[in-house]
Amino acid sequence: MAAFEYFKQNVGRAADLLGLSKSEREALMTPDRILRADLTIPLEAGGTGTFPAYRVQFNNARGPYKGGIRFHPEADEDEVSALAAMMAIKCAVVGIPLGGAKGGVAVDPKKLSRNDLHLLAREYVKAFSDNLGPDQDIPAPDVYTNAEIMGVMLDEYERITGKSQPAMITGKPLSLGGSLGRDTATADGAVTVLVAALKDRSLDPTSLTASIQGAGNAGGHAAQILSALGMRVIGLADSGGTLMNPGGIDVEKTLVAKESKGSVRGLYCEGSVCDAAALASDGATVLSAEAVLGEETDILVPAALEEQVTKENAQSVKAGFILEIANGPVTPDADASLASRGVVVIPDVLANAGGVTVSYFEWIQNRTGERWEASAVKKKLEQVMEDAYRSVADVAKDRGITLREASYVLALERIVDAMRSRGKL
Ligand code: GLU
Image (cartoon, rainbow, N blue to C red; front, side, top):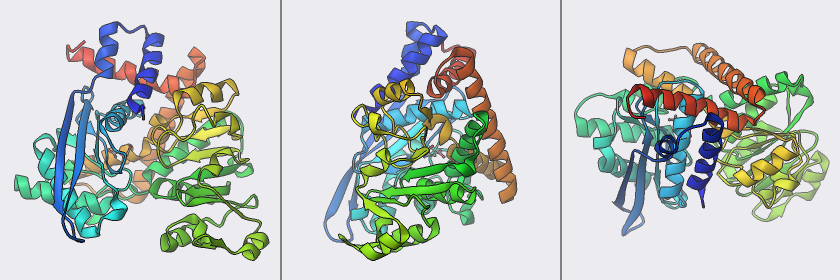
């Protein structure tokens, strides 16, 4: 795992293009603060569990620190730092006045009960509450956390501080001041950017196919939105396997099967035994989890975890477009190899910024006491994402660089500008 190294490479390239000085580069690659704690909770199954937890506050030149908290066995300081840094880039790319942070707990949430997870959420807030707050650092959901966990974290924060502070966290339940449209925001924003990129190349989304890796909040919603748009979703994968169907997957049925059986392959399989007759009559196949990356498709949508397309498998990618809904799914080596073959990568810091954009809308609503209609959220999100795509695409065209390089160039310019205005550079 070298996630932070990848971030530095991306910043390094953009800094070269911008002609930034050594000290400026240094400032852009250094987190403001790394907070760590060991969270100990009594487990429902008996005994106690201790889990390392992190909050990395990367940069707040443009506004309060902002970023999700993930519960994942592989969360560590390097990964959380890289993700915090990417949040700062993301907010700058879409031009919202927030900085970058990220949190993580090294835990396998599938092994804990609901009650255990609630206790863990409370311990997390207890450990870091001095450094959190609506004007300081605003968490949100990330991998394996959700609105329910945000609700518990808010409750703990308000218990500690003794006052109502809904704007201290986003992605929370509607009943606690969450925003309409936040649950589908990441996927909605990504699809808006994809459609803009296709339009730029005179391509019609309804004549194209998509394969999606990840069937959780981001991937599942992306599959639904793309198929509602008229695109043929021919591949859908999760950690249990890949479902391929060149004739088009029934997304709704597949997501229902995932919900009840734990994996998309549950549509045709019970454990390791699959219904061959049903597969044959639907024209579907069940493959390994990684297989989705190398299958024939126009658009590949990695919407799970980082480092999926690497130097080793980049050559086998057949898609013409990669829409990075996950954070960091394509490594820099793979990036170079894909670019040399003309594969268009729509980078994470642009593609998945819809999530934090609607978090920003939620934060505004909490602070003003307004409640925005779902249609208003959707319209504003589309506007932000379309504008961001246009700005990035223009920089890419003017400088003859990739969309990732252009996103970093645009973001660094904005962050450097804010740091200079603060007299920090
Ligand atoms: N976890 C999401 C991300 O990586 C959302 C962050 C937020 O809404 O603050 O962008």
